[in-house]
Length: 301
Image (cartoon, rainbow, N blue to C red; front, side):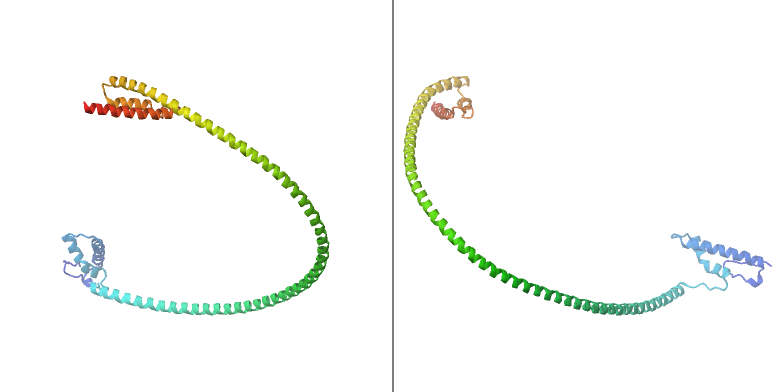
């Protein structure tokens, strides 16, 4: 017997044959797989939305004993499950905390026990070390006392020996002092005699040097006077020659005073005449006076 179905009827398994049941079951599973794929899509067509709305129908066919939960039921079950998981997590955390506290207490007790044992050993070691140091200090003190006694004995012996040596040395020194005083007196007399002779020689040499210096100074003054006279003569000659040269250059430069002055100033510059610096300076002064006279003359005319 074949069972006819539409989209709103649920299959009545008792009235269908086994072949129809298997066929409908396979078809329902296939449709559910297709609906799962469609749910993953972001944009749906009207036909795809209608297929998704048929999920409950196909679910009842494929799993008749399983009731499909609603969204609110799923949220409630998830919240209940999360609450239970949180409670379990808190219980587990509390248990771990208690175990950690227990381990920490045990470790602290072990550390304190070890510290006590170490402190006891350290105290014993320090006690032994202090005892050893005390014995060493006692030995050092006894050794210092022995050395001090020996040093006092050696000091007394040296003082006696020093007194004997000092007496001999003083006697010897007194003899040497007398001999040295006699020698110093003789040397002093000879030195005084030689000093008088040397002083006379030095005075004579100083007088001769002073006379020579005076003579050289007079000769230098005469030379400077001659040089000044020669320079004045050369200046008077050079001035007339410079005036002639100025006139010639001025004609060549079409009576341009500044250009003529620049040319002659470069020619008679002290840097261009390093061997005749004073002469070059005088030439520059003469050029300046000639230039000023030429400019005044141009201004007048």
